[in-house]
Image 1 (cartoon, rainbow, N blue to C red):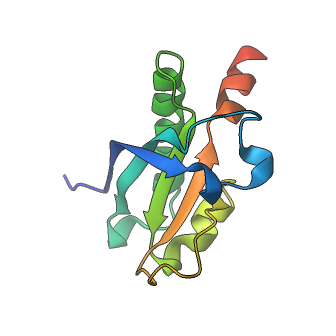
Image 2 (image 1 turned 180 degrees about the horizontal axis):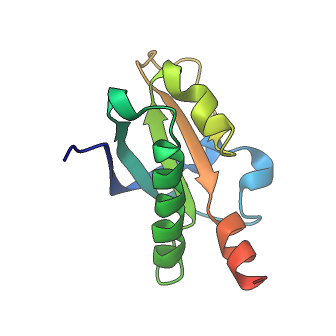
Image 3 (image 1 turned 135 degrees about the vertical axis):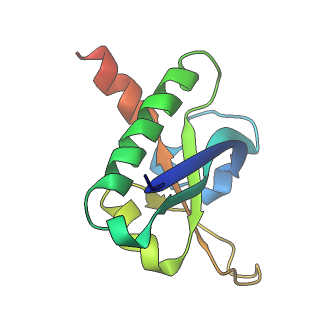
Length: 124
């Protein structure tokens, strides 16, 4: 048996100004939104391109959807390497808006509004 992939989730926050204006809650008076972060998501090299990462992301969406029904958190964040941009963009993650004066990082911050999952669940 081999470990083919894993993920970890942690609590996080995202600054309101890092989100696209249309994704923000109108009238939200706080500087930060509470969030859950994908701290790690990895697939063993021998098992890439078999849908394992996508299935783990679906599981993450399910877990975060469950959590958001009990706590005031609707944003999922992730910082990833430039080689993973396509994977997250095709999963409807949005690139966070960063201050151009901030020092460059090795990772790119993205976020996903979990409200889409919650609405989809309620329509079932």
